[in-house]
Length: 253
Image (cartoon, rainbow, N blue to C red; front, side, top):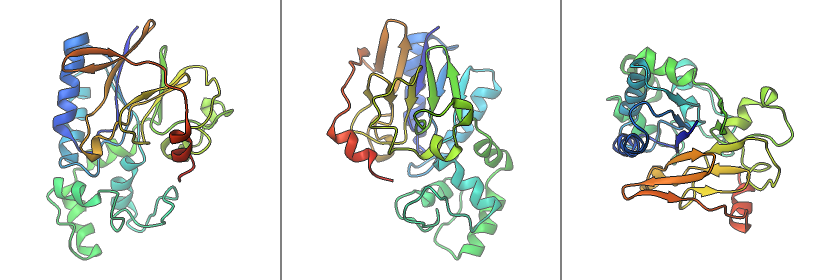
């Protein structure tokens, strides 16, 4: 059974629809598609992305969406406005952090982010549909397919899947990215933006940087290989050794 997968979306609805179109041209409308999370923040239409994926799943599309670290921010803010994600080394709030993209997400829901926190919270609670917040908050943390294990950030090497901590599944870099271990299934993940999606012997990083204006990666994973889907068709993805660039990124938190 083949599996299609899509990288970090970050509010890029047009790119998401284009990636779905490339997959449907390759595998038909019933193609099984796994999305590695980070639906919201930074891009212009987080609301549209959430609506598009919810609608597709309601219509019976075999789409899987796992939870990314960014997907926790909005529902957590609505529930507990003082919560700060412990995965953030800066210890800054989602609203205050200049690089997380809260302003873009709030604007997509018609909320003005440039107002006092109390007023912003009241407006956001009115504007964000409860089912959107519930959807983001309850997305699964991983999906195991015969071809791959799909998670947002990665896994802690040596820890059984059922014992993996949520914080690692949505945030891990150091300890995972530089690992040469055989994880069993191929680990398909995003979270760490590279110039392009990269395939390694033990994992496949699909975060090609759509949040920063680069293409949104869509791939097909089959027994005989992995291909990147482009407007020109399939492009084989060779195995790339884990090198110094990845080691430097892995050291960040």
